[in-house]
Amino acid sequence: MALTKFGFIVTGAGLDPQFNRMSMASDQFEMITVGVANASQGPAVAKGMIENGVQLIELCGGFGPEWTGKVIEAIDGAIPVGSVAYGPESIDQIYRLFK
Image (cartoon, rainbow, N blue to C red; front, side, top):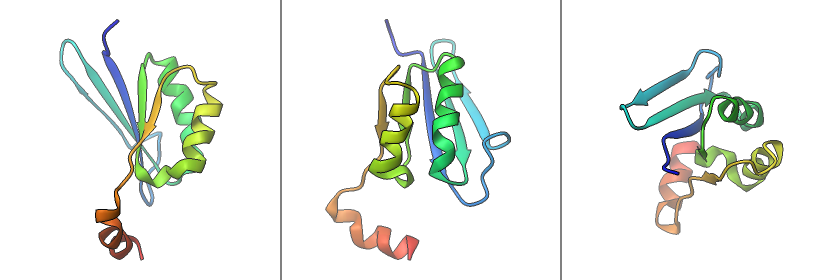
């Protein structure tokens, strides 16, 4: 089975998952991106993605390990869930961005 439907959930101030969503698609692949204001909205969004046929979910770095785990738990491990992480070479830049 090929990957044909991918989901990405991103956190950002003021984002509303009902309105802040987009799709990028070809005739063989679709990527659905949904924005949430905070990671606590992630589990519900992930469940909705699965209901819509998403086969794999990637979470932005704002979820961290705790909320990544909560998303996986909420979907009962139904599909793979990964999260973006930054290596030590990015720590200073990330700190400046979010301080």
